[in-house]
Length: 365
Ligand code: SF4
Image (cartoon, rainbow, N blue to C red; front, side, top):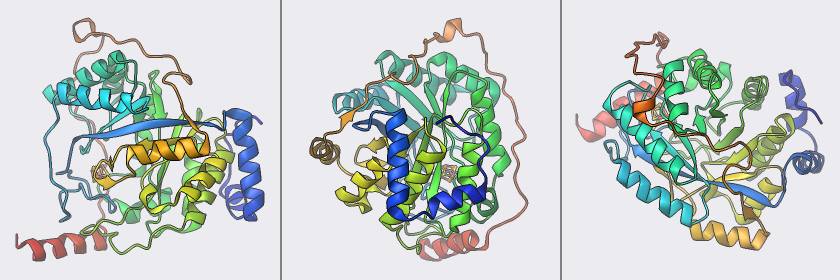
């Protein structure tokens, strides 16, 4: 089967709503044509700068405006990151994904420090991914030069539902960042979250947006919302495992080559549920006891699951070659100190405002 870039929402809905066994069989068949079904890629997500984010993503406990239990932390040192990466490598991870709670990357000492982290981890022969918010083309090039393997920037949901989740930046901004990354040899990781109150049509809409990118993202994380107290989504019901399996299977069918990653929400899934997700085409997980700030299964538990299911962790750089690291002094791209005009859509979301207000009543500020 060749990769199609012209999926429509109707076609994707038809796939999503197939009888369960048909859906599973089709997804598993496509999965086997493109991937080794017994190999699963393992990534470790590391929060290198936590909390205090100016954005208002309704699901996120790191947004400064919500009053959650997340403790903020400044940017980690390169040595701290190196120590964590070595630990991740020894427990089977081939990739380290570094997340910073920023609206967008700003040229300056902090970005330079992140570039040094990228160089350091690439030299450990691990795939390095970053998720730092919006990036300009020049910043993406600087990351590529440092040896970045992947950049994560999720679309989160459909364009229509997006306005109910985030008001501080637009869908177009997200697509622009993906386009900026695509101008380099860095691979693209982009997916979304289910269980935020969206319709099935929105899930299909998000898959249209991702699958019609050409090339399609090399990784697509599928998250189940972890409803955190203090965020506007604190009362959302947990996603049922059946919905997760359907979403994974549909993603696999419309994006046959991509790594489909089981991301947030795995603590709420049984081992049997996760096994069905792997059968349906998931071939990547996040390991480590925390996913930025929300809980995740213990590494030993995951390795026990791998043993039980006969799965093997994927080695680094089997899908794309290891990038060269260019040292800072030899860099072709200097900081430009750009002030890009990312949009600030002029609307607010009532429930986000209500969460902020509620939090301030509790904390008394
Ligand atoms: S998801 Fe990212 S951009 Fe949005 S509030 Fe959280 S840290 Fe900020």
